[in-house]
Length: 428
Image 1: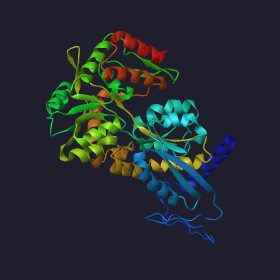
Image 2: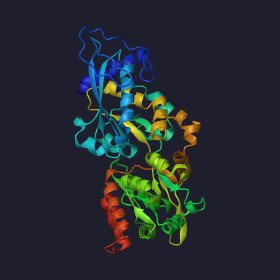
Image 3: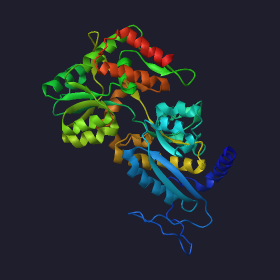
Image 4: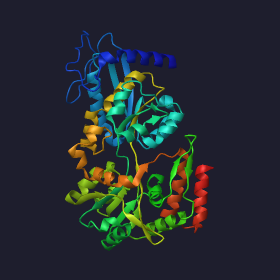
């Protein structure tokens, strides 16, 4: 299979000058279907799908993306099918797989995984080490040049481009309902909690999540990072002063104006009015905008109190990427599809439809993107944020730590011992 894959890629490379940017610019007129008795084809609502062309390969690709992206991905997949109809009889089957869980699902059985899939950039090393990611061999220089540097770096391992940048907005900030908060209120977590409590409402954040709760530690000068082996994590939150951060988090968790909620509960709370502010990401900007209307607003993360001092919360700069499965039967066509899905036009369409920030350098500088409240908040937080991709062993222990804090440390653990145990679980 590997031999066949390399032969196919080599042939695809030879064809590059001929096809140019075919995946980016759909052919004006697909070739007709000359078969005298074509099999019945179910037409799409807008345009009929092209009929198979005799003499061309029949290729089926599987494409995975988030549940909320399925309708958009179907349209893009159909557009790609039309753009290559003169070269291949292509079928694209969609499947639902969250970017946050793609790694775990794929590594369970790479042979059963999709040919093309979306995933978060903190999963690159695990997928690379498992041999799942197909190196980008078509249009690699063009892909590097058209995307912002941080997204290319996130998709690169040992100088090899291993995925296709899709977004540069995989971070978080503070959503808030401006009907309740002033510009001064949102500077301080303490003040926001007071306002929410006085209004009989709450602020939220997902405490049992290492991706979110590391923001408190990062703000106070602690961090976690990928080890030199590219697999394990290093972390220093149990250094002197780490217990002050945990106590600050306990104070927030125990405040009546706060509740720890995951994504789905966060959106539900916005809709029912119980949540008037929360730390979350741009993927929920649409729900907040719909619920709060003209009062929808967003800002950088606030300060919080650590040992009597105000400390700016840190954050993460992350990206979403599209990968091609190295175990797939049609790596060449999969690479063309991934290239198409991440080109300028499709990143602009993703922003317009889903509010996600483009990694494409030109698209990210458009006035519409710059005026977006969520993306503007991410930009304001960028000064206090950094790329974050620890090893896979980071997440479980940090989830446990966050859950203990969320519950208010019910077993009265010594805070230093609690941090030492967490660090040992991550690095041991």
